[in-house]
Length: 317
Ligand SMILES: [Zn+2]
Image (cartoon, rainbow, N blue to C red; front, side, top):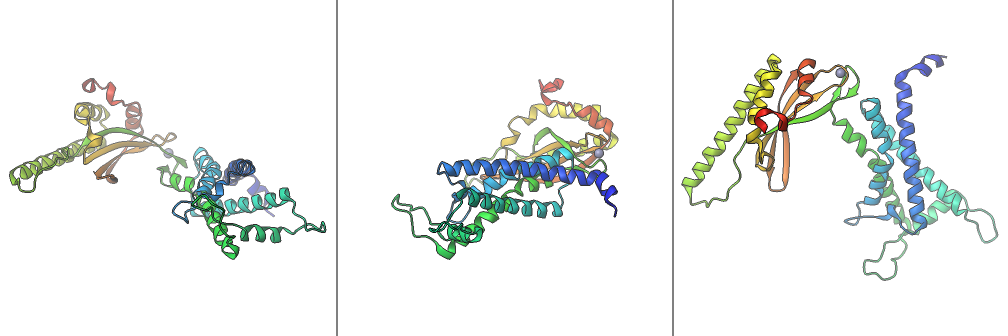
């Protein structure tokens, strides 16, 4: 038996901490759901566009928040195995809640013999009915279709619990130090001119606008090249000076059809990091961000830019 080694393994105890944190938030959420149900507010019964179990998804999200928060605090990378474990634990919690509900209801037959859990569960599931949309009497019991509602609830609660972990999975992570990295926006520079309504027949104006657009795009491209070279050299002074020069041009950049966002991402432990440039395209109500380039930077560079504030640079005033 090798009980001793597993007992002292820090990795395993971290897993345990994450599980406990998730179970704690799940317990709190299930208690709140139960309290709400006593007041006739059945949150699990909230649906939109008939079959999207919003109530179950939200409850699952809240219940699973403990896993997500503990993962970040403990610096544990979210793996596929962890995702599966979260869904399984969420479903376990859902089942436990059903059982508790049964124990509290304590159903008995007319002659006083207790009703079994599965019989009770089956009866409750079959008695599910839709709320009448016209404010009249509730609809007919769904019968065996009630299991469809159950399935939706379980999927919503199970996968709702995964949302937090999936978001964290996208966060930058330092493999060496095994922790999540910090990130901060340095600047947003324009890469286009403001959108303008031009009549199609006005070819002259269209061409002029096109030229302006091209020039703005070119300018952003050049700026990135300059900054990239400075980052490569580790010249943080000059890098900051250029950012300061750009400060005046950044006004309104976040409303342009296209801009470039520079973010610095770094590890708090080893200090290493990178500057990431991403193009942000805004067309109608859709915003799409795509990474253009990444410059690896030294801990010294990070240390100097960590406190960088565009508003406090001399030219930014
Ligand atoms: Zn690190």
